[in-house]
Image 1 (tube, protein in one colour):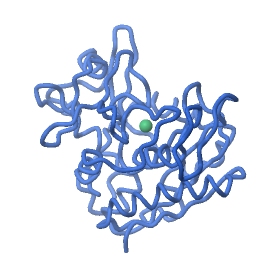
Image 2: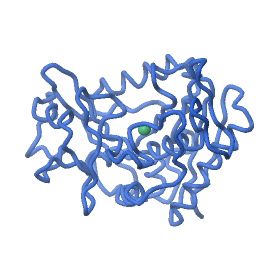
Image 3: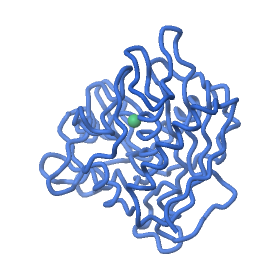
Image 4: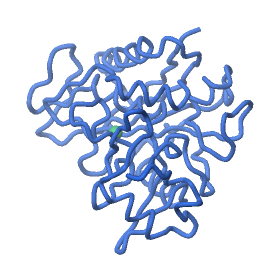
Length: 281
Ligand SMILES: [Zn+2]
């Protein structure tokens, strides 16, 4: 069985926007032909999101499941289902994607044609957000100044809960966010510094308490996902929660830090696919 998306549309999600969301899902189904998972998604229309956010994906996460490749590591539940060859949490959603109520001067492009200059392309942004739900979620956190960095930090979950509750559709989240207990995400375990040391290797970086060494790396603009060749990940100063590390530097990639109005990216580029394959897709 290939990848299957089971989508629950919330808050009068328009039919033409559903069609655009489904086109994005179909692109993922085609990109991951060896996947074996049924992904339960909620898609929320008209959410109130923090300034500048067009959409956000909140993935469910699970650890220590049957045949988990690594212990004490958080996997997005969609990926865990794929690795376990079963729906590990049949009563829970795997991810919820919130699409913003855009400011008046902007508009969603839900059509198959190219977005106009003041339109955000829903298909492109859905494709990008689904990638977060499939695994592009580093679980890192940093606060300054001086910057102190950590992963699996309760403050990350607190901020996520704040965004979810502020969306006006908090009840649409079809799962309870886990307490991360200082454990890394599977994506996070692949992040290296310039010397090839892993940020989640306790022999190199202290996580508890949050450390200046981790903080400096998280805002240092010099981090990589450990493919061959290594893929630079976005690590700006200041740290941006849910954006730093979870995106690629390449401005043409699907997983660049943001897809601006007027831009369209409706294909999965090779590094993005290779990263998902490395995570276990
Ligand atoms: Zn993103």
